[in-house]
Image 1 (cartoon, rainbow, N blue to C red):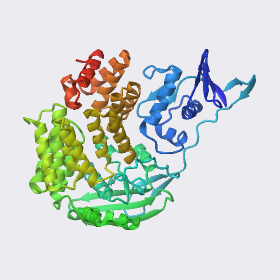
Image 2: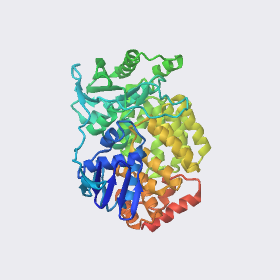
Image 3: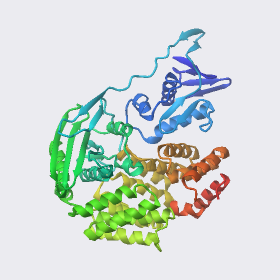
Image 4: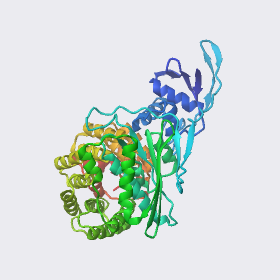
Length: 551
């Protein structure tokens, strides 16, 4: 198969492209990507389509596709900001916009190659639960992608069967109850993640980042796990109805389903029973320590739990006002249950954000307040991963890197498959001066949670940046911004990387986008957002941002 893309002659058999005096050999995967884009010329192709067809449905690291796109653009002489070959369509995918000619001369003859068109999508099956009010539809992809290679670290449970807990649907007549159904989803995921015999892929990371979980994300998530857990929640006055089902993604068989009609005060019992039923259905063997962990409840007060879930929904909005409202709910939760460790650990995070984003909270020293609250959470429950995470986050921003590493390692001991733990461990290493180790840790986080949010992508970009690989850093930061336009760290570092590459027009444009999401941004914000040990590194970022027009 041979064809032309604009002025480039593409010889697929030899993996070569030619134009004038240029003759370039491509890697096999890059050539496969070029052919696929050519067959879909003019059509937006999603990342999921490319992973399914170019990578045969395998779960790949995020930068595998990005690197291939970057390589193609480089050899074609394309500019991502003013593309004439490959266009990035934000939040949708990529499109080959250059003309394609499938009638190309080969070996002094002519070979007419007809465009085959896009490959048909993988077959899907819609599973509809029959249990009473269960309205959750689960769309399962026929082929389950092969697992990626996980590190040999024994803490990483790569051989365990995987399950994804899809966000439970809120069937209440009140949209304001979304926080409650999302909270139940998250807590079931947390309970399951305590088991060494099960690998949990939890899409609540997307809920935390964006506040919503649309059908496209749901479909992407489902391709990542052997088992799917879906459900719905209906709350009315003091009554609670939870419908749930467990599906085998290989066979599309419903393995288990149940409907619970209880008092609202029984919500903890319902969560425990769901977890126990999954353990029984999947025949997971529990150690004595795991039995104790699963039986452990964060609080026995439904009122405190409700306040906590309300706070959690507000906190994830990442605004000054919502941060203060979340803080009020968390304080009420602690008043109702003074031993509610999770409430303390989340309250600690509200003070970190007050410091990072220069919000008005009236706190004299937010970081020390964070440290005090996180230490209180650990003192109450020294097996709570989130408590150690909050403590490590505070220590990182205080630039106590060794203490932060020790804290997050305690978190990973309590929950070996804790992807967020590896993500913050990556940042600690990067800011502490070891970008190579940071790269290993963020890749581990991405492998443990292939449904990773944009903030993981931003951490990956920072690892590239501090390895002085500014081209890949810029490409990854672009993807992070495409996935979550409000992500401040990605905008700052994209501007810095583009400036370092000498792409001043792009850097200035990126600086304008940064001003759009953070009109009050100033250079003093950089040290708060990025707790970097090396002052020269901070100064370099300042200079790169100034070159882009920021001050």
